[in-house]
Length: 61
Image (cartoon, rainbow, N blue to C red; front, side, top):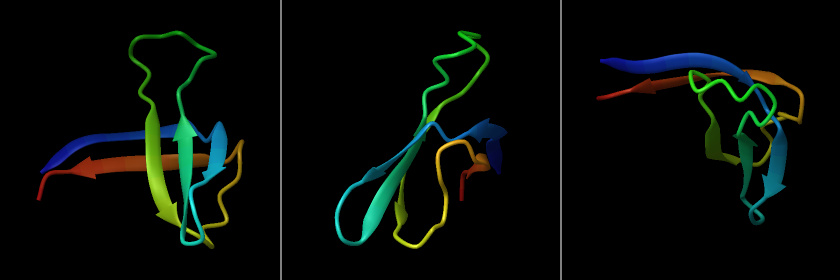
């Protein structure tokens, strides 16, 4: 069951360790309460950089 599906810009990519990074967006620009943000660990080699737009899909399985 899909819980939420949204598109947002990546604000920052943080180095966690040798195996993963963290991609995040806290949407500090708009201030709209309807905007959603994320902070997700991803495996190295993802190719995502700040400014890229990504789709976040949360599903309950």
